[in-house]
Image 1 (cartoon, one colour):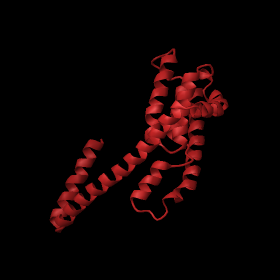
Image 2 (tube, rainbow, N blue to C red):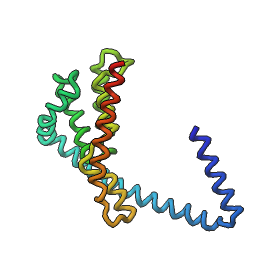
Image 3 (tube, one colour):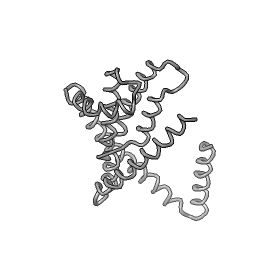
Image 4 (cartoon, rainbow, N blue to C red):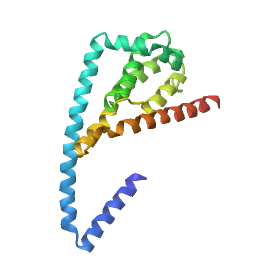
Length: 190
């Protein structure tokens, strides 16, 4: 559907620019937009590299083990099928920590690794386990204490106060987690 809608938008935009005499402004905005996209990509890449590096260092130290032990009671409640599987609990913990720090891009490979490990433990390979469903819900809600990616985007776009988003993000992600967890349990009851 989108591969039909976007070309229509582009054709209509170019046609309007030509017929309204704004072709020069269109060309200027195209080059300005590409410049902004490159600048934003570099800012996000720097932030992503920094936090991925920190997560890799934390993984090689005892910090992740301590955080896994701290999160263990919550993980045992949310993922009862994984109670005895410490490596999967560690992978889930690393993903949750990355999400809490607002590192969505760093959390993605960690989440994929955890899902792959949970799939190996899954007895029904063509069906998601309850733990996998809960994990998807947690990742979709992405509860964040420090929304690093959003702060980096706001900073790169010249926001006078890029951290002003922190409190609203807390409220939004907690509400999303609660709403998604309710819908997840409704699906399991069906």
